[in-house]
Image 1 (cartoon, rainbow, N blue to C red):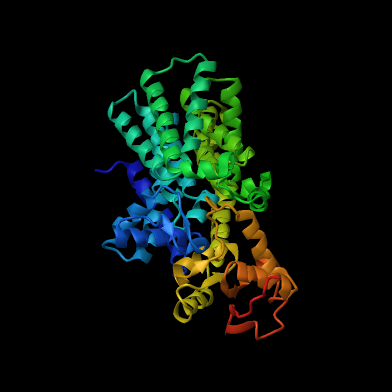
Image 2 (cartoon, helix red, strand yellow):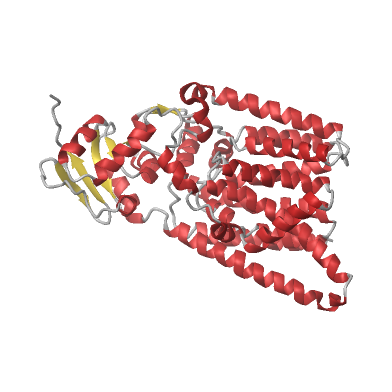
Length: 498
């Protein structure tokens, strides 16, 4: 007979996955960033190899990335439709986090109730839920595996099999995403806490952390060696233009953190960190603190994007909440308030409903509404069917991947800036083409990048605060070839240089 907590876990998993799939299937399309991974999956399925050399992105460039996640999706695409694979698999991966959180929380608290409550909360971290529900995000798998690695590290002294689990997990993470560096910094901070608190250092633990550090540094150096040679130390910021780097962190404040993560995990997590820095010792809490502080450190230095950092931070705070919850219940049991324990638990649950589930639904609804519409997709399909294969198409930065994946045409710019030497200049030139009032400014830039078509969508109009191309006065130079919700102009003129 199944244990009661396993039944509860199955119900929580089903609820979280069900809500995720409800949102994912609200639209047949995906968030713009998803189309990079979709193209990679298609290429792996067709050729067996990722698209490291791409003739369409930036009108021709090389990609550097770890393709393990795309290979997993491509494997399932062998016997499942691609659209179903990209809707279903990432949401199953992301929903599996509740099992990992349950295992870690139970090890930390020795309380099934605290572990179940924490696993439930982990299913509705607003930032993680919304950012992985329809974006084919690598983090849908990175996050569960990374926290399974933490669980394996906690358990290595109880059974040797967890050493193998740890090694497999670190290899997968290292092959999947550069965020493995966050893991390494967290583990090194954990070693520092152990030393400062004069706790016994376990040999197996130390050896695994040293192995992980060497593996991640070596593998990333091999993969990104050319990027280091091209960008130097700026490769750490992925060569993201300064203008965008500022935008990624412009919303970093306590109110947004409360919305993206939830008030209960933040308040309880801060309390537990304070408690175990100044009052108590607990090596498992130190491991989680290492992750929390490494995430804050990388956010402070702007080495990871705000939303990515908040995803990691949110899961860590949920795990710290489990300790807060179990300590709180133990405290209540020792006082005269114990008769009201059920009321306190219900109060915490309802606060969680209004500060986590409601923001999750609200944030996810907004994300789904921002998904490309049918009219936008139809416009890019029109380009696919009515333009030459060698034509270059200009759209806003966010729609660069759509040009490659849906229209199957060359773009001028997209969000992958590695190995692009003139990324800042391109970003500025795209802005000029959309916002200038003068043909004499626009035409030379259109000629420079061999741009044949200009896409004017709601997204580009919003991004550049325009309603049309201000310089489109001569129809002989700019022919309106598509006019629905999206407008597409064909560039016909050239300007001779003197």
